[in-house]
Image (tube, rainbow, N blue to C red; front, top):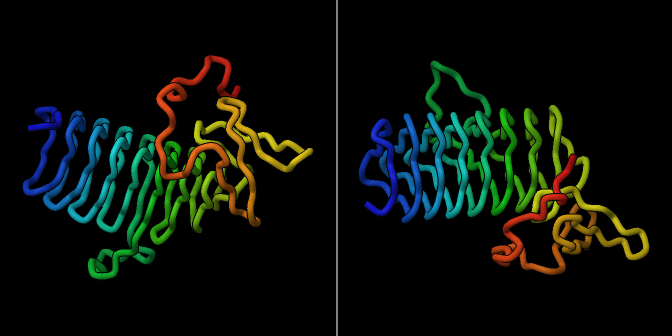
Length: 213
C-alpha cells in the first residue's frame, strides 16, 4: 500500500488513492473515490464514491466530500467546512440523479465552517473566509467573506491580501513580491507564475514577517 491509513479508518475497494496520501483517524473513503498523491485527511473525514480529489490537498477534521464534488490540486479545506450537492434536498424525495457539480479549483482555501453551495465554482487561489456561505462563483484570487459571501479584496498565491500600486494599477503580494494585474473587471492574473504551475520550491516557506496580523 503506497498510502497511509490509520487503523480506525475504512477504505472501500476499489478506489484510487495516490502515493504518499495520509488518512488519519475515523475516516471513510467509499469505493469509486479518486484521491491524488500527497494528500492529508484529518480526523472524521468522508470521501464519496463519485468525488474527485487532486494532488497535495489538505483536508482538515470533519469534512465530507460528497458525490459531485471536484477538488483540484493543492486545495486547503478548513475544519468542518461544508460541500453540498443538492440545492433543494428532501428526505422523502431521492435526487441522486440530479447531483450538481461543485468545483474547488487549484490552490483555493476554504475556511473553517464555511459552506459552498452546490453548483458553485471557487476559483484558483481564492480564499473563502471562515463561516462564509458561498452562493455564487468566486473568481480566481478572490477574498470572499460573509453571508452570503462577497468579494472584499484579492489574495495572492501565498494567501496574503494584495496591495494595489496606484502608479501602474498592479496588485503586489507583500509576502512574495509577485505582481498581479486585473485584465478585465473581476479577472485577476499573476504576472510572475502561471496559474497552473507550482510555486518555486524556494518560495514554499514564507518569511516570518509576511503574514497578516
